[in-house]
Length: 337
Image 1 (cartoon, one colour):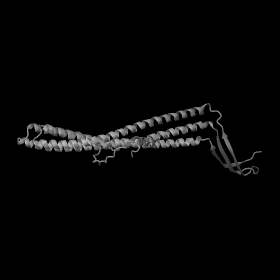
Image 2 (cartoon, rainbow, N blue to C red):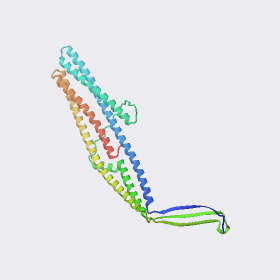
Image 3 (cartoon, rainbow, N blue to C red):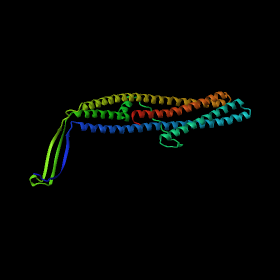
């Protein structure tokens, strides 16, 4: 007999368990997403470090330019004074010659300082994403206190907070979960299947609806060694990621210790150059008084003037070098914000 029949229904299938494969694949994907987010943060901190360096370099050039401007102004006044005294036969032409040489050296210093300042502004504008350099009047930043002597604290902070380290750690964990997921390919899967529907057209003997349900067990009996090869590859990648993580951790510990030493040395040099600047100011004041009273020659005065200028530039250099070193230490510990 031939019967006409039309059936419409719905089939539902739900995975009950695949012994952790899907869960491990999901966890691996989430960890890879976290790794990319940490990579983005690491790139952001690299940009911040570069901007900090350019900013402090511009401040250093700005400070040296200010010193050069004050030096040129002071030497111009001194040249005018010595020239007036030489006109009245109170100073020799040799003194005028020395004063003029010092004035021209100051102008050379000012020219170089202004050029360095414009170059620093160009670098800062580039790192800020500007096509055209701008001239800024940068606000002086307060000097941070001396770094702690407990370097282990900085090392632990870096191991916990460095975004590039967190990214590689996420990648290693993702590789480990993926290896577990590949190992689960050897395990069976268990699914539940249900089907239900109606039969609007058909013979009355066949019924006007239907429903069925059951369990499906899938066994991976033979795959030609594919699953074993995939598992071995995933495990090797996981071990490689683990060794890369260990290598990066060792490098982070080294970099933090070096950055900490550099910051401490910069602070010590800042303190020493501060004392040097105070001594140079006192020496210059005494030499100026001796020369004004005719007790010493202009050679002694010029030497004191040169020592003062060198001390002022050294103090400006070490001041902003310390700020750069502290910024580098914050970067190495993962706390640069």
